[in-house]
Amino acid sequence: MAGNPDTSEISSKITGLIFFRLLLCGIVAAHGWARLMAGGVEPFGAFLDASGLPAGILIAWAITLLEIVGTIVMAFGSRYTPHLCAAYAGIYTAGLFMVHMPEGWFVVGLGRNGMEYSVLLIASLLLVGYNHLSPQVGQRLFAFRKDTDN
Image (cartoon, rainbow, N blue to C red; front, side, top):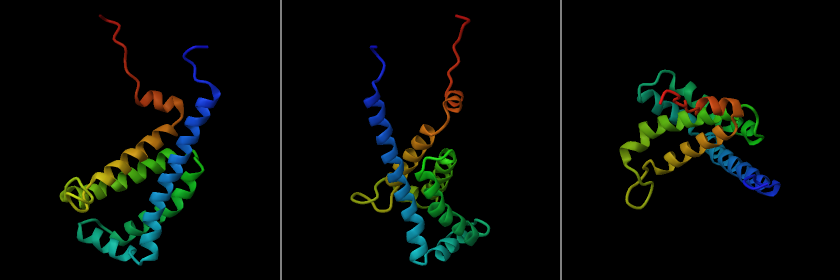
């Protein structure tokens, strides 16, 4: 039937999305594991305290553990994937405003520590999260009303 994708095309798209979700899991988990293994949780908490957030060390531990444990859950494509993606996107959006945006756009080259990587990571997380929403939720989020009074 014309216009309908065949099974191999659908399978290829699903495989690509699984690979991309696993790639994001690795990137997000690396944040948490690197912070934990390098003893960076407490300095991160001190930074959050100095930035005016209450209980910075608790927030730092919560973020670190979410990056480590949440990515294991997300790797399996569970029903919590959209929630985890939204949480990570929120965390990295806060980092974008607190750290990266003042440094400009470029991470390297024409700048240093800019926001281009964060923007790409946030957009990727939102796309993977959206892809894992149930069809009914996705349709309700982005439903366009048809105007019948023309």
